[in-house]
Image 1 (cartoon, rainbow, N blue to C red):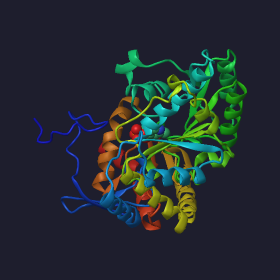
Image 2: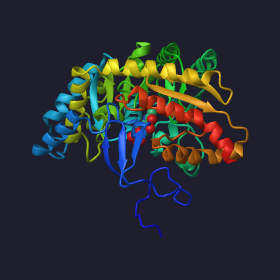
Image 3: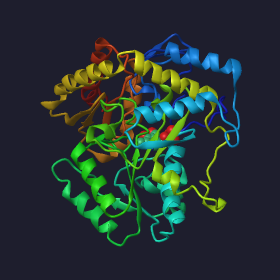
Length: 422
Ligand code: PLP
């Protein structure tokens, strides 16, 4: 039996080596017990925006914990949650007026699905019970979010528990019509409650990007069919795609918006599902059966809310938008290196995110490639977790030009190193 009692996420313990033990984090860097520094090029699963242990966020956590710990959020309230809700309304696409707190990206999306269904049920539109979602989407690992996400090896054992959704083809740039047609067909019978999508970029689905115009058009079609638009901004929020929220680039105000990850700058867990007033109103009634029945023990944790408020202060007081723009520009320049290289394909960026497909000849080999690539990067002190043959970088915004060069240089080395090891 292994010495550790921990059962790790997305980890095949039978084949994966024991992970480095991290003892300190700072900026873009993680430091392990052996004294090794590791450059966090994936923002610790896309959460860390400004950098690890951002001083103002850490100070806010310390300060909040002097006065408050978890306080039940039904029947009681507290300043960190009240202030955060009103400030989130201020930075979110205009028209989202209500904020429901939970603890993770998955719960933010579960809450959104329940809000959408509850809205129609409470209005007496009992037929609207179906959800449409993009092919290749990822929305979390709970039963509801796996149902709206892509099916595959990751959720095959649980398929009997998952509900069916209308799959809308990915709106491939230049070939969006298939997505529009499918969505129109899905909406025809008046049973569609919501379209759920990751705006502008599918994250876990392979960092696939699509145009803001396609986002607007899909939202238009869904609404014309009477459905709500749910934007899952769990990954895309807080500057990742170049704007505060990805929806901003399409001028889209979704009916429901999910945020987590960068909400606290990535320091501690917190999520929020923002909704338009009509959705709140659909749950407003003297009839208690129309209550929005969702809670979790740690809803609106005051310390996490304080961290999120400090994150908003950082956005307000520091040139974060400029940092994001500079990183986006640097990524655009760096990905040119892959464009004429026949060993790579489909080099792309979406704001601060850069991705490229590694061309590999045999698919059997492909199944082994993920762990090998991770080991390759880790040996060089880089934390990069490719998604199959897709290598991507999503660093915190404090990453320097020299660090970014180091990351891209390592990616350029990959094909040669894999060839040599064959
Ligand atoms: N939605 C999107 C778009 C995500 O990328 C993720 C996580 O990567 C989730 C939802 C789930 O978030 P969490 O892992 O915090 O439950």
